[in-house]
Length: 348
Figure 1: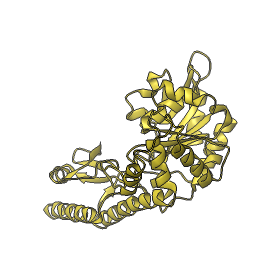
Figure 2 (figure 1 turned 30 degrees about the horizontal axis):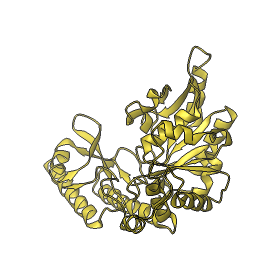
Figure 3 (figure 1 turned 90 degrees about the vertical axis):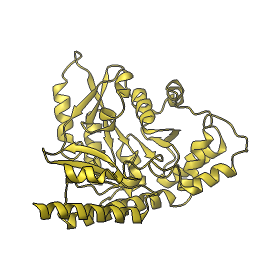
């Protein structure tokens, strides 16, 4: 059985494992004070062309979200998120556990827009309600869509006009930046959001996210917050070494490009045989709509998420390609779906 369930089923890119082995017995400082982490942070700053950002390496996406959001907000302040947002749906109430309400907004494409934020602000009128303060977005989103530069410019302007913090979850930022529909560069992000992170866990690393804090008032005492939330890793070298390896050349982007290319091949080939999709996803997540019978037959050979029920006979599944997905596995999946779909069409 081959898994298209997520993009972190595999371990890590061989270059990362080799780098970890080569440095294994070298003694260094702990808690991110080691030379590897310091060099990785300087390298990331150079890639962005920014010396004025603070960068912290954390182990995972949920930990990064809860540590950052709880640090950025005062006790009475709340988060605005799309209803599909990771903090809303897949973090076991981690943000609420820190005392901050999430205000959920229904969207058609997983993306927030200024008009929706305006309605949330209008609905929260005084001190008897929580105060909307932080806007949480994901790029790519949980349903595979990506933000354009124009969309981020508009969100940024609205947030600054209304004293809101704009925070980007970048667990799949590599996929977003390497999408054929993307017009953003990594170096654009410090100008367009107040904080974001670069996801390593879902793009070739064993674990690790690089949080970039761009806005000065959000930077103070952040390592205190990390320690309090269990995010200050004693063997911080493990994160620094991985980000050094991912960004010393274009490996980070090459891995994301690979996963996107295979996802695009998958969606294009399925479209040719009449398969419809839940969403237009230009990233490494594909959401084909199939009959329940076809889905059951595929589950005998492949692992994937059944994402959403469309009607009594159809559901959308999520297929995710990774940095390590072999092309022959995608080709085989395409042929199996084509065969099953064609058989159902002929029976009808």
